[in-house]
Length: 107
Image 1 (cartoon, rainbow, N blue to C red):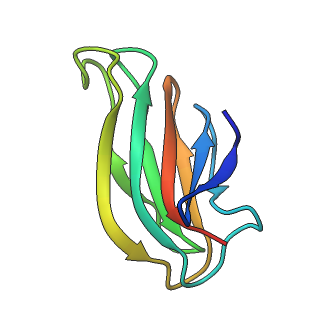
Image 2 (cartoon, rainbow, N blue to C red; image 1 turned 60 degrees about the vertical axis):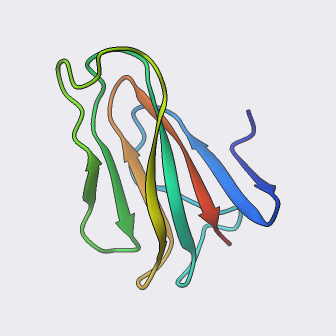
């Protein structure tokens, strides 16, 4: 899967497990980018945390993960409703055993 691509005007980016503050967008992202949602892809029934961050802001946990936090390895969506960045590029941090596909309007 490509790491960043465009589908019908929206972009998506795959973020592997164990990444810290991976910026969304082919050019690194910027203020005004829109994060529509995240597809969480667990690799075990004890996946790590998934966090988002708006530029240099404080990280926000959108999936806590942890032992037994999922009962199977089925991917699941976390719709975010089109939140707009106010401080810089959207960034995603993924813990062990969890990757994501983020989608939205990134620059």
